[in-house]
Image (cartoon, rainbow, N blue to C red; front, top):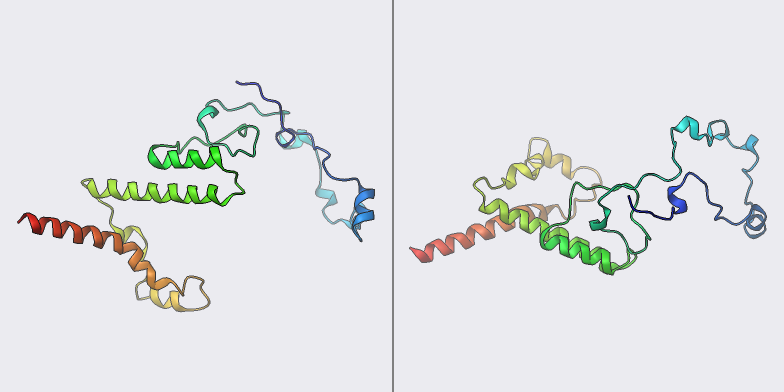
Length: 193
């Protein structure tokens, strides 16, 4: 386990980062009207009792293997516990690592690189599916059949659904790439004959 300086966020202590009550009352009209416990309906439930919550540590033990995990440049350290189910791999992993290593989460470039990495991953998965012996079935695995009658189409046209205006694009987005690949294969096989 590596030694880290505990950050206030990961400790059981509540850091005093806010201005004092007097400063806030002088600056904000009406601030502090709910400070009297008699005026607060949640007071009987509010407790800071570590024995009752089961929190028996001051700083959680750091999970091993965090050296290769992506971490936002705004944070001084990786959180003590993190997910390891989807390790970075391939071209999409390289793009994701660039997004985390170079750009702040407040920058558009960070998020656009993550979206690009997702699109690269989708293209790779579709390519792997096409060259496998059991390719994906876009009709049954995308939920397109749920939009067909007897109840799908009328349900989608009722009310004020947000996706109503661009619903016509769904078949093109789902079937378009498959149709293009099929057309390209037909042309390729036609030339060989």
